[in-house]
Length: 206
Image 1 (cartoon, rainbow, N blue to C red):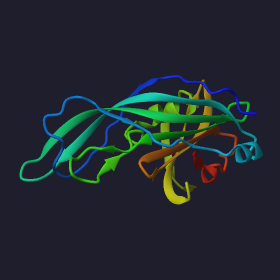
Image 2 (tube, rainbow, N blue to C red):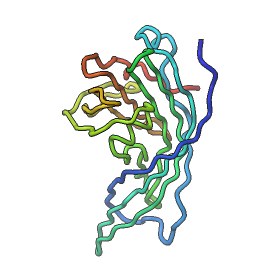
Image 3 (spheres, helix red, strand yellow):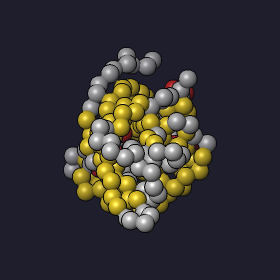
Image 4 (spheres, helix red, strand yellow):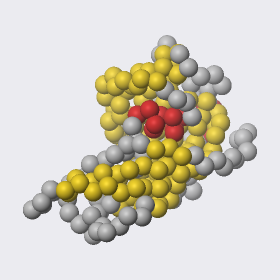
């Protein structure tokens, strides 16, 4: 049985993303405000089969600074604040393992172009992991790439190591674009455990 839906709004700050091009919206100092359209989640049957259940279902706001490198006759750097309302689903195995799915709006940074970016990708690893799983990771260190299938698309994720409350953990983080949204999935397990094959089970809600 799904737990009651909770709504919490959190604040997470960090990360930048670099863009090349021209036509950044001139003279704009107000943050870009955007909201995700359709949440991605695990079907209950897939989560149950893997021994996981839904722990948290909420919406929250991410505040992040996006840096755009503009090249042309003159190279310049512009910074924009982004306030993005995202959907989050966190699943747990009842112990220390977590699987989180975050759906964020793709933000249009360049006027008159289709160059859009997912603000969650702009976050540093520690911030993104905490945002997706609700766990604060210390000293995350990249440990190579890993291929995963997310929303039917094969993508390259990153494998990381670190500690949570003094316990060594393994993390896999991957992202894809889906319509007007970007979807990030993060698996966090004790280093002695096995990363669940739940990425390919993620679906977009109705």
